[in-house]
Length: 195
Image (cartoon, rainbow, N blue to C red; front, side, top):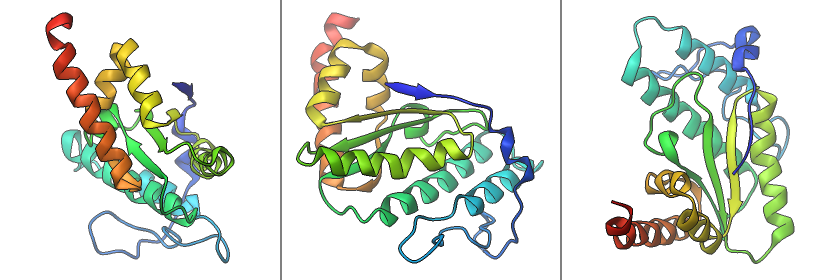
């Protein structure tokens, strides 16, 4: 996996007015577009994330779960704004796939695609990864077909373990389901040799 990391402390200047009543503290601008047909503005997510991290009453597992849900919503909105309906899926893996996201955790993401349109996949990856980097969040990401992900997992125990926790976020659910099915079957078949 290719990765890029930086300190997310750049969020300290983010502000936003609370407008939601769902307990996640959505802010004005969250989930909205920057312009007609534009991607969701990252400022809403940054402000909501900062407020969540500053809540002294929400620590440990509840905060990790809330942060994962908030991030799920933001990434799903980025994917949806890209207008992709088939042939690609955004998948959380590893700790993030388990729904556990600590304040300094990297986002473990897999952009799964069917391999039919490499240019469209590259454009989609840009629309997903750049907003994450723009907020200074650490990102451990890969862009693969299910066959490529399976081959990588067969030769890399860490990658295989991460895929065992694969969780669908957005896009073509069939791609995610097929990958999970084959990765779990491979794990079961290879377990005797690994143990």
